[in-house]
Image (tube, rainbow, N blue to C red; front, side, top):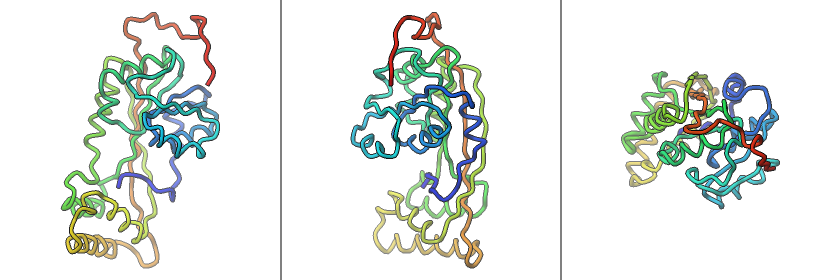
Length: 252
């Protein structure tokens, strides 16, 4: 329940902040980044998208014309050193926060290159959203919580591989009709695992909440926070010379 639907426009200010207008080569990690890759590709950035799941890459191939897809684990990237101006993450798994992946992300960045991280998180500062979370957490105590991902981001951008850390948040409002909200709740694994009567009771509570805060004929606006981080690479024990200066060339 932490994914934004296609009904809202991603804030241009967040795109400007994450990656500069100057065009460059960018490495994106994980298929979940494909929507962000599409946004930035339209701005002229050249992307390589890496994921360890070949089947998942095949599913997004048609949506990413001109983007090179590479099947590999984050901790073992088949890419030369100093190949990219930026690395983009739109999620922060424990695997990415581990030392092998951190070393690889730093290795493929040019001197002065940036690691940029973007998480789209439910904004629980709105009272009705907090009430929704309380209902869903009866079935899934971790629902609508991003504490794990946020901790992983802190481990990534705060590691010895990166420095000059910057953060900024942006707001995104997504129109949500009752049917769409109920579908999102049904899709939660904890809710799906309930027996039929318990699931029906929980969904009825969600429906009552929606009716109590919505205006007739108008969708609710579901708030999200676009949390963004930037950090400059540190090449530990290296001469910080880009790969092109060493006589090696590669074309993606």
